[in-house]
Image (cartoon, rainbow over all chains, first blue to last red):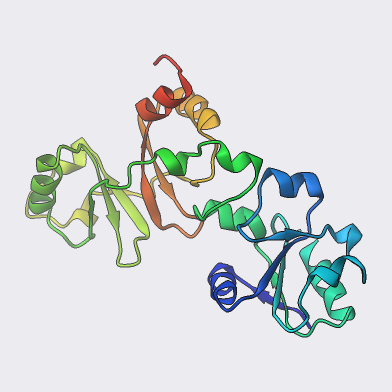
Length: 67
Length: 160
């Protein structure tokens, strides 16, 4: 089960080398995103697009807010 | 959207998946770094004066007033140990009984704005409200600084 986390935990996990994934549409990502985040829009999340991710490291996903 | 993405990643075999539920709105509203096209546009967090004087609610008006005026300011923000904004002192409050604790006459719960507000939008808002200065805090209430309308207007090229 995915673990819900908040800002301080995001920062701590990033320091440990977690991967940050912005799942918003590409245009929104290009406008503004968190530093070091990569963009994999939710609609494109599949076996092919996730090949960019390291399965051994934690993954943090985010969108705009509580959507 | 992110809960669905998190579940999908788990379904695709990822073991440690976290969902930053409050998302980028929360991150930006905390004044943390941004990247992207809009990250180059100034926000009120960039313009707010971070050296605004602060005091604790238990301090006495006499000592606070002396410190604030000596530093050339006309306002002081009342904060707790976590830098959470509790109140504001303007000229009228700063002239209160010097022996009284600040919390007895401070302006409680002043309006605050998030640091990721665009400067142009805020200039208009402040003009409409007739506000000369507003407080900028993170989404969890921590003081970022004091934003003067004249600073914002200067940046966007608006005549007062």
